[in-house]
Amino acid sequence: MNNLEQYIKDYFLDFITSEDEMKQAIHLMRTEVDSYIKEHHLKSLVLGISGGIDSAFAAALLKPVCDNNHIPLIGRSITIESNKKEEIERSILIGENFCHDFQHIDYTSLFQKYKALLPDLDDTLKSKLRMGNCKARLRMIVLYDLAQLHGGLVISTDNFTEYLIGFWTLHGDVGDYAPFCHLWKTEIYFAANILMKELKNSSKNAINLCIKAVPTDGLGIGNSDFDQLGLNSYEDIDRLFRSYFKGDKSNENHILIKKYKDSFYKRNNPIIIKREKISKKILKK
Image 1: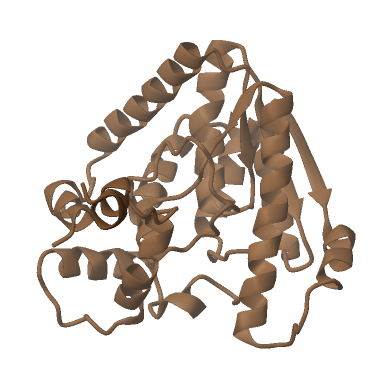
Image 2: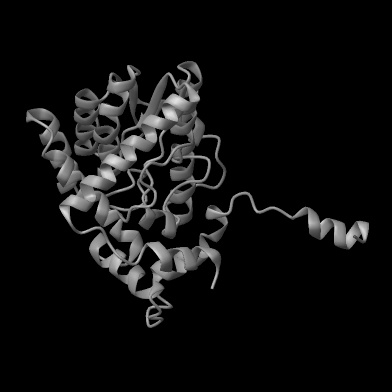
């Protein structure tokens, strides 16, 4: 058993299922972010907004923290070629309702120019993955430049389910502060439903639309997350992982478990040849 699997067995096998517990978790996340802002004298938080549940939850979670610290929550919806109309509309609703500084940017024409430079593109899954990675990394450039410009920090919108699957792009849609990377995807939906109760009118509607939306990466790789993950709901995905880490190996060959094992390099990036190995082999120490 590796260190991550032991950590999962220690802390991740019990889901947060009561409203009171989730309210405490939300309060803890906000308190932690607030402390980090103060300790590091941040002047902004920067958030990429996709129109999906994770970035919507991040916006609703962080706006009160930014308000209390009198700093802007800077949001950008950066759409490129494969984003659906309803995704874009949801991202704009979230940005306009929760961000102090928000813009929707369409980088399709810029990406088309870049795509023309890429060799050997076709309609295969491999080519779709390549283009998806490039889109995520183009968005990353925008967000990190904003963080540098405004003395801020890029917020990660990863959750633990996607972390295990490797369902993100290295040097792309990853931030520097991850407030809920250790919540399962189903817990994000639960938390978002609870946050809705403190919201009114258009803000509540914006979150609700993201909760009900079919989850997708917006990169044109599949019609939904589930096209790539082999199950039809995040409830089923989280249950499978929970069962697997409890010791049930009947799903050892499931695509999700294969993705978990194959994405080891993402969770341990960069892979480092350790100094002690160099010393033992070369310096004879």
